[in-house]
Length: 334
Image (cartoon, rainbow, N blue to C red; front, top):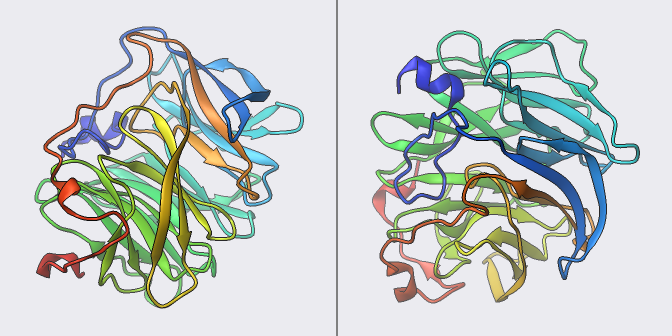
């Protein structure tokens, strides 16, 4: 992946191709952060209208980090919104493109990406800002931090390389802190999320021909269970681990009832909740409050073409029963 592309890249997570998108916005886009209930009923808004990208709630649900387009530079800046007041502060004053962030389990630190040298590199700093920023991983590839383990010891990130496209990597925060691949196959693996108990990782893979949501054990991937059917991406867990939420290709938010406490993962059923009209498929369209009863969504109000629609590839996923244990392939292991 070339360096100019990395500067403005966002994850090509659900196109079925794994291709990185590096286009600047061609038209004015405006969206709003909105709290809704499980029926999609609007409860409250947060902040002003802007061109909003990825969003990530803090563990205490008092703040949300959002990648906001700087319309002068054409890159994104990371802003922290106070959910009580709607006020916001910028994470740092860097002119580099910064479009993805995750919180540590205690909310005191954040890991984020920034295009300052070669690729979109990973850094960590205090969530309050104003502290020295520590470089975590640097190379020529694009990188997006997607989940921090509940015990604080690992960060999952997606890396895009010329050889295998989007893959999921693990960054240990103890010992030699050398990253290693968790899922790196010829298909595209994205949207990784640790379960609340740290035993599982939910992720999307295009191995069936389109993006589907799977769950696999951690720390070493092994057997995997299919959660979605007919397409799925952007998986997020309820705080107690009993539900897994994800986006369907028709922009519906889905809720899967799961059991993540036993030796084998179980999916009891999947149901639709409501539609989300969001501006960018490669950015999270929503996050979920700790109790699973409210959702903070990035609601599109003005933009070309309205809500995104993701083209579906062949539905090979229908050949696999939802919730079934999926046979291993040799390349599924790191």
